[in-house]
Length: 151
Image (tube, rainbow, N blue to C red; front, top):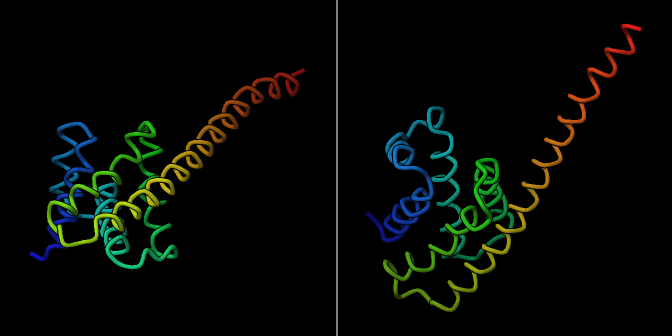
């Protein structure tokens, strides 16, 4: 197993610790993307983020991967800290497995990812609240409209 693979596995394991016990076991053992879409999204996109963090941080690859993870976590009603916290874990995981990496550079990239993740989390939560508000409005307007039709 390469150093990058070891970092990815540890980061994935630390990321799923935010979920309840049985869910952690499922997320870590079930590899089928259709039976475990959350685990699949996490694994696939954490890998992209790690590659970019250790490389050039291309926004065209980093942003979609980050958005995919945060979108899932926002829908799961994680707090902002829980939703974004997995990014800060990366700093210690990289240091544990690859101390030869430039710690300052990694730290700056982690901070950049965290800020991007927070922005995405807020955007997703706003969208969720907007959807819920529109659903509530529709639910309230249906009985009123039906009463007018019956008159």
